[in-house]
Image (cartoon, rainbow over the protein chains, first blue to last red):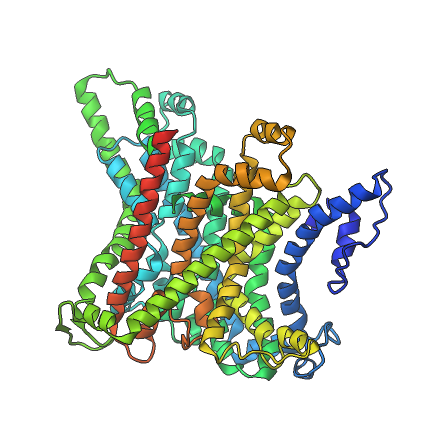
Length: 310
Length: 316
C-alpha cells in the first residue's frame, strides 16, 4: 500500500468509492493544465489504469471484508459492503474446524525447506555448468532445458506411485522431494553466471582459491539479485503448489494450506460458511500478497523471464 | 538462447591457461570432472527421477488395465487409448480442453494487450498499476477460486446481487455444466491477464521509438499507428505469449479443482486424468493414457515454439 504514495492524490481518492465511477469528476489540480487536456488525460490515461487496478483489487477487498462478516451479514438479500465490526469469529471457526495452525506450519516448513534446497541446488548446478570443466556440459544443459518444458501435471501419477511406494504418503518429505530438482532455477542462474566477467574468477584462481571458495566468496555474492529472483519465484510456487500435496496427503496432519482450504471447503460448503472460507482464503493469499508487495520487482522479472523458455 | 549456449562457455574455457603440461592438465581435468559431479549430480538425479522417469512410466502405465492401489495389472496394449478415442469422453474432454484453451488464451492476450496499452503511457501511477494487475498471477489458485466462487454464488454472491438490482435472476453458475465452464474461464483470465499485460508492456516499450515518432509525424493517428506499426512489430511477443499461455492453459488445474470439484462441464484433459486416477474410479492405466495424450499435445506446441525461435534467430 505504501506503493500508493507516488500516485498523485486525485486518482487515489477517486479509487476509493468504487460505485461512483463517473468519468468527469472535476479534479482539483493546481497545475495550469487546460480543461480539455486534463479530460483527455483522465479518460485516456487514468481511467483505464484505475479500472484495471479496481478489477484486480475489488475481489480481494471483498474477500477481506467478508472474512469479518457474521453469517447474518452474508446470508441476506441486500448486500452489506462493510462488516459490522472487525469480528475475528470466522478466523476462529476456520482454525478450529480444521487444524489451520498445523496447515500453516506445514506450508511454512515445506516452503522453507523446499525453497532453500532448491535454491542451493540451482546455485551449485549453475556454477558447475558455467565454471567447471566437464565433457558433456552442453548435453546436460539441453536436458535441463527440456525438463523445463515438462509440465509437472503429467507426472503426478507416476510420482505418486513412486513416492507412495517409498512410504512418502502423508509425510512432509513426500511433499517436498519430487519438486526438489530445479530446472528453472538452474537455467536462470546459469544465464546470469554467463554474464559475469571471467577476469574476476581468474584472479581468484591465481590466488589459489578453489571452486568452493570461488563460488561462495565471488560468484554468489555478486549474483545477489538473480539469486533473490530465483528464491522468490521458488517460494511463491512452493507456497501455492496444489496438485501434488493434494494427491500425496489425505490426512490433516501433513496437509499444506491450499489442501487444507479444500478440506475446509468440504466442511463449510453451504451458504453460511462463506465468511469462514474467506477467512481461510485470506490466510492463504495475504502472506504471498505481502511478499509480492514488498519484492514485486524481482518476482515479476523472474516469472516473465523464466517463462521465456516456455 | 541457443546462440548463448554455444558461445559463452567456450569463452570461459579458453580463458583458462591451456598450455599447461599434459600430466597436470589431465589431473586437473579429472579433479574438475569430480567437482562437477559433486556439484551438479544431486540436482540432475532429482530431475532424472522425478521429471524424466515419469514420462516413460506414464507410457508404460498407459498400456495397463490397472486399478490404482491394486497389486495386479493386466497388459492391454493400446486398449486405453482405443477406449478413450471411441468413447464419448474423447469428444467431450477434447472439446472442453479446446474451448477452455482458446477462450482463456484469447481472452488473457486481448485483455492483456489492452491493459498493456493503458500502462504504456507517461503518467504517474503506472508502476503501481503494473504490479497490481500482475498480482493475481502469483496468488494461490485455491484461494482465488474460493473468492470468486463466493462472488458467483447464485444466492448470496455479489454478482447475484448486482443482477437482482437489474431485475435479473442469477444464472446457475455452479450447477449448469456450460455456465460452470464459463465461470472458470472468466476467473482464469482474471488471474492470468496480468502476465500477458506485463510481457506485452515490455514488448511495447522495446518498440523502436524513432520509427513510431516518424509515423506520428507523418500524421498517422493513434489507432492507425497501433494497427499498422505496433501490432506487426509486436508479433514475436504475440507468438511467444500464444505458446506460453497455451501451455499453461492446458495445465490449468487449481481453479478447476476448487470451483468445480466434480469436473461437471470443466473436465479438460489434465482434470480428466486427475479424476480418473484419483477420483472415484482409480483407473490408473486409463489416466496415464490421457496424460500421455496431453503430453503429446504439449510436446507439439513446444516443438513449434522451438522451431519459431530458431527461425527468429536465423533472420536477425
